[in-house]
Amino acid sequence: MGADKHMTQVRTYCPYHNQDEDIWCGPAVVMMILRHLRIEHTDLKQEEVIDMILREATWDDWVTDPPALEKVLTQGSRRVEFRARMAVSFEEALQNILASLQTDVPPAVLIWGCLHWAVVEGLVLEGDTTSSDGYSVTDVFLHNPVHHVPDDPPDHLDTNDCCGTGPGCGTESLKIYASTFRDFWMRGWNNKWITIGAGDPESISLPSSVRQIPAERMVRLGGREIEAEIAARSARWRELSKETLRAPVSAGDLLLVRRIDAVPHASREFGLVPWYRGGSVVGVSMIELESGRVGAVFTYRRPLSEFGLENDAVLRLFREKTEWKGDGLEVFEHLVWQPCPESFSPDLPFYQVLSRGGVVGFVRLDGYVFESLTTEGCGI
Image (tube, rainbow, N blue to C red; front, side, top):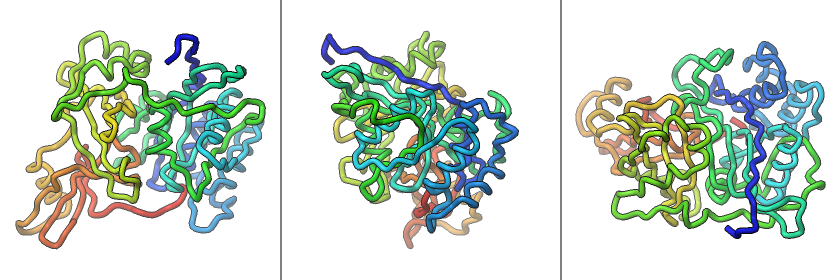
């Protein structure tokens, strides 16, 4: 990074909320954005919001389509005109996102192709948006709603509802490096990058680049070992986990995860490295195995007692949940993951349970059991 460049955060710090049902990302996004715009939670019950979205729906086979989400957000905000924009490049989508953030309106973004809606609550910029030298986007802060499978949904009334505290409750303000966000999260759909927000994108220039992760954020993969200082250098950890970082953190073993949906080869495998403090997991780094870079940092406000399961525990949980009879079960050698209602977040991959006839089920990293994964959907 050049000495003449400066870093700027454009943040909204909007509240994070889970989705109450497995296909209700739209209502969760509406709740997050409108709560930030000071709309009372009593006017944002997700079961009522989904009815509004479905009444406005015009696209076939979508739960929450872009025109419906645009209309519900505009009507609900009472003062902001939201626009659904279909960018022709990722850089143009970042321009649209930044324009909205500069008006203090966190925009909705479509991720995982057309599968899922999330909210960008902030960006980190390098350079000046008004300078002829241009600027680049280095980091994205994402609110990615997850479904509380299979627990009852939280009441969303206060900070004690567990939303955003970690794994099954989702991770608020997930910090993702911009190139990882482009390559892993927001790859576009039908050559369009869809955002719904406010502001005037033409008032700012396109980012000159999406900055690649700099060398000081890289890790060296020596066997299964990871440099312990890397996650501690993350601004996200310093900002929201000051208490955590007052004591040393230590890295656990890297867990290899293989994506089982159709993605380019470079994004097919990634690693998860848990970070421990006092025997508890306080966060996880996502590692791009192709480059060895730290691509994202998950910070858990509620530490976990463990991260990962032994194979015997995986099979025991699967048998208990499914009442599987007989022997012949084994666990696939690697964890697997794909974006789906059963896990919209890559820090919650699955153990794949096999029998002689093939795959018979999945046990999520936190112990929840599923006999299959949902592989299709739009706006869920």
